[in-house]
Length: 410
Image (cartoon, rainbow, N blue to C red):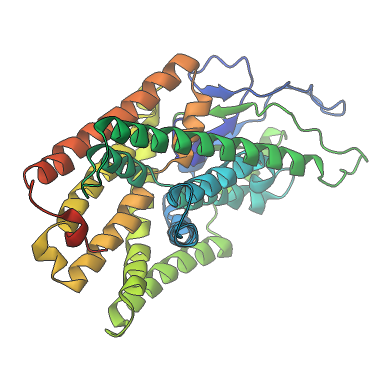
């Protein structure tokens, strides 16, 4: 939730590129196919440079983020049971990172190639929707930060030694990171395996794919490549890329209608409906703003070399909002109202859950140089915990006689 930008920032690049982009290196680079006329990369166009991208990408992120929050909450519900061995959120983090690795390694197929101009027009935008919208919403950085902080301060007053609080928080930190990286790597392996099974091309040879994910995290925006043609052909293709087609109208209309549908369902849902369902619908209503804001913040990733400031800002902002929402959740004035609890739950699961992401964070940790990985990862975790300390910690410690377990909306 790419290194630098959201998931929409991973682009193929020459390993000898002198840019500040970050490369994932895994395996060997295969030479170009013998029938290729040249190894020189085709010209590329940034997705955000397309006239319709500023409308199509948010429109596609809307349904993807709603689906993502539903998957996250569904996996969390399934993984919550008596005697569970690990915190339930871990499976959503794993699945989101698994899909991220799958989409990253099959990006060339998603975006399309060859003479299919329409697919090359929509493919890059679909890729952004799947990575930034879907994967980024399945995973969440803010809930992970909250889980670590709650293990540290033990607000429900479970009896245990302070060192055990630290060990419990470290367990949440390390297990989540391990499962996220494992999911990301497994998804890449699965994607690479699927790419090798592609049908033979017209020449009778299977398309050669690299075992190394020579994936570069472009710190600005995702790009897609034009095939090598004459200047006149390239000009006509660039013109085709800028056309507003029926597919563009369908994507925009579907996204807006999906969001409108969940809002109407939230407003007209009968009062007798179970509170958990109302909270779920509220989360779906607030998921798109969080995911779209995260995507816009990702545009600032190239500002600092080897430090994706956009993703960092989204994760920290979402963690701070979540800390404030938890304070309201533990407030007696809010707990007395069912609607108040449902709104807070929607903010936590929808807005904060989709504004922050582990899938991009894990990909960034994998993509950055080793020193930058430790710096970026440590700063992200520490700043989030300090924010929790200032907001949530001060709230809890100024109420020493309060039983937060009884006051919680849950």
